[in-house]
Amino acid sequence: MLSQEQQEALAQLQAITNADDLDNQRAILESVGWDVQKAVHAIFDGSSAPISSNQAGPSRPTTRTFERMELDDSSQGATPRSGPSTYDHHSGPVVARTGLNLFSIITWPVTITFQLFTGIVNFVFRILRIPLPRFLLSWRNLPGTASSRAIGRPASKPLRGGNPKDVVDRWVRELEDETGAMCVSRAAAAVDEGSSFGSKEKEGRGKLLPDFWIGSYESALKAAKEDVKVLCAILVSEEHDDVPDFKRNVLTDPDLVRVLTDNQFIVWGGDVRDSESYQTALKLGATTYPFVAFVSLHPRAGSAGRSSALTTSPQLSIISRHEGSPETNTSASNLYSHIVNTLLPRVTPFLTRIRNEKRLRQQERELREEQDRAFREAERKDRERMEKRIEEERRKKQDEERKRLEIDQKLKKVENRKNWRRWAKRNLIPPEPSKSSGGSIRIGVRLPNGTRLLRMFEPSTQVETLYTFVDISFLSQKGEDDPSIGDQVDQPPASYQHEFEFELVTSYPRKEIPLVKGQTIGDVAELKGGANLAIEMKANRRSLSEDGSGSGGNQTESEESEDGE
Image (cartoon, rainbow, N blue to C red; front, side):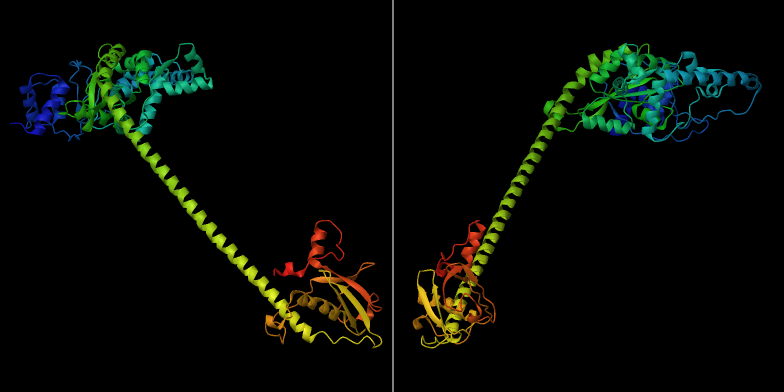
């Protein structure tokens, strides 16, 4: 009874060889310790009989085991394989012979001359973007050259390494130089820039190559899985004679390039002499070159039905492989027919369902993100409204507090003015001299309410006392001198500086009586012989001045409105 791993190895070997003799394949796997790679090597090396693991012979280095992708070519026919076009990945190391011999000494001048000639021609052809002639591509096969000595000699490890991205980019550029073609995207850019190739493309003489994925094979697989696309992997080996024809005639075929481009295939390629391509060949089980494989997402084995295929996570599988001569198996017409008639009808429905499901998930994710954005925006607006309302309430409280303080200060000022007037009436106004006393001056003052004050003053009385007499007259007008209003004031209010809010002017001609400290009534010419005066409120005069009108004479308002009482 075979284990699960042994059954998978037997199925994998059968898928690679397309053979029906399971007993013989089982015997081969048992002889190599169930190593599929060694079994493939034994079969395609020409020996179909079981190989004993203890067979005498030189020891070979241990071959690194690479994980193979699942092969799903159930809908494909048996792929014929040509014996001569095989590439052995598991052969032992072959050391190239170095040094001089008689033949190399004789052919050395011819070889050097030919290499120089081909180098110059190759440079010119690259500048003009003209495909290289076939005989120049095979110059390394001439006897005595280093390339001819290396042909057909497999290596135990890749001959070239480096960054996979740089390696693939170098291979694509060499492919463009060798075929005289240009990748689709570069050709489109060249047409936009009006280059010489763009002119040739417009005239129909330019060749196009598919856009190759510049990166590792694993990155191409990842892109095919994430973008739900088909991956076309192309492997070549310069040691096979069919490869130049494959490059020049198949990869530049207009129909093949168009179907790969229109269906958005991810095309990846490389030479097995490079490390990345060598490892890819082991993963894909490539033994004959040129080699073309199509990889796509596929339902896992055992998942039946549409619902099961969608709920079960799909996996990347090798849908089909094509290898061998570009005249038959890997011809442009064969590949085009396979893509149009077999590959796309098989994978498109499943990939479309996956894309729709992915698009639906993306739409749901975008909807959730939009809802989250709307929620955050609403939350932000609510927060701003709340902050604005709090700020308005705070500002309102500040305004109310400011107004309250202003009112309190105004009321306090009014109260202090009243108390000062009460105090001044009893302490600053001297007794009125009698009319019979000589030298006294009679002064009359008309108040804003029309009342007229008459009083006798000594010439030595200061003008400030006259102003104080007029100012305290407001108490009598408002009844504030009544003892019932409050206690009599014995001292002026603390920290209060009284200011007169009016000016005294003569009636006719109008002339202001300025308030000068220490000046007496007898010193003022307008007052020394007696006078009739009027009151002008400073606030009214300022308002009239701001309005652009003249002074209002004695047309003043009562202080009652000024005091807010």
